[in-house]
Length: 256
Image 1: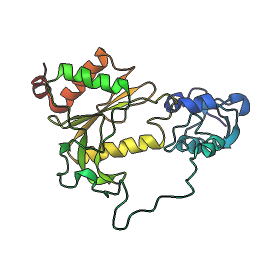
Image 2 (image 1 turned 90 degrees about the vertical axis):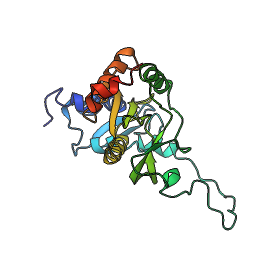
Image 3 (image 1 turned 90 degrees about the horizontal axis):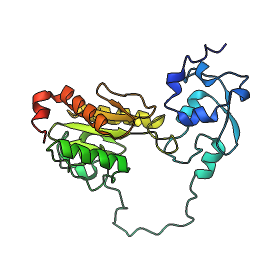
């Protein structure tokens, strides 16, 4: 028997695409809020393209993987999104390593664990909101935000470095700006698992992490900040989180 209506509403909030693709009329009138996200039951879903399929809640939450296609929770849409391999490849010159084959050490091989540095491998800011957050922090704090990577003692996706959105080396605090993205695929499911692993590696290296969590995303750590976007109020709460981590005297010493 299903649970009372609304029992699991908060548990499903981080998965807006799944909420949209679940239809009570396809499941004997049972609402998604009555079903535990880890329930081993088969439910009927309908993707944005109109494909109807059966899957358990766990299969649905884990299905996105690394794909960014709008309907990636649908098996038919996922299959269509897989790129086709080229029929032939250019031969590699003898004795020459393939591009990107730097190994687990990456560009951080000669740097001590826990040290911040500028990595040529780090991606550029993914959104205008992230750049705005960096700018507002620079206006409030007299800090060098040039480093974009932190050396770790264990590999993260094959490299001994992680790339937080904002690296505050003086405070040894990494800041991440998290949203669900345009299609509701970011920082949910397996990507949340990767976020948690990244946070553990940073803390093991002597750093602390503050995540600014937007929309329906719930906090992952003790210092995370809930926000509706990058605003003066959210930056103020972020500064309070930094004070909780490193103390008022230290953080206030960097105020402009």
